[in-house]
Length: 328
Ligand code: ATP
Image 1 (tube, rainbow, N blue to C red):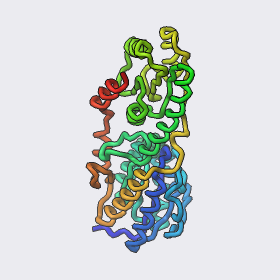
Image 2 (spheres, rainbow, N blue to C red):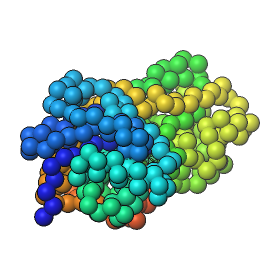
Image 3 (tube, rainbow, N blue to C red):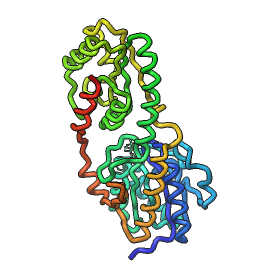
Image 4 (cartoon, helix red, strand yellow):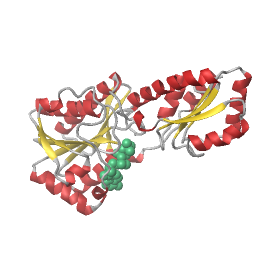
């Protein structure tokens, strides 16, 4: 069995609240087990530029409550090339790093798997960190819970003003390929309609429903639009609907990047701690090219290959149906 002596940790792709608790967990679990730990800055960019530093237990003090990532993150084009990967490999060898924990989404895992297939002497373990909650092998990904709570807080405030003015609000939330945030936030805030990238929206039905709301004497209506909806963004849909729904004053809010920020929720702090701990223990046990996730409240280890190929966006029909019934 391979023996790990020195471990690198990086965060890559979109930042997600919960990454810091995970970094803390990786560092402290590794040190507890007698390993040295190196922090790699700005994801794969730091690997290529040799931008790394030795970490100790104090390097991760007081970061549980911080959003973002103390290691910074980046989208790194050169890592997609053979030359970029070779430079990254040489930098790891120079520093005698045997293994890396990569915290990120499917792009990050694709890079990690390619790298590890090219250079199998470096062990690689993935932790799902993305607000989109779109990775196979874990019911929840780091950051999803916090981002959903942030969206809910914002929509509750919009509901107050919508109600005061009899307005119809179209609120755009993140989720290019995944309607996970939109659906959970929609249920939590009693949205009158939820538009998801996984399901073609019938605009005629939406208009009928909104007219029905007026008939039912609703004083405001909220439509949540995931940014990946096939009809375009919230502005495009609002324009179509405004022509037909004259009784409401129509407004649009794009929540944007505020959804990524903020202190991680209790759920994301615990998830980050559990997954970081599990990732280091899996590496010590000799695993590589794997991802740690949480399913039915138990740690589950999935191969990166499976996590990436089984990756599919599935619509939670039961939740959609319930949301429709509860919003009448
Ligand atoms: P999010 O889901 O939040 O967008 P992500 O991990 O999917 O996170 P990406 O920007 O898609 O974010 O990927 C992160 C990084 O992974 C890329 O910037 C690139 O460095 C690396 N990467 C992605 N795809 C590949 C690939 N095919 N080969 C090598 N590296 C890759």
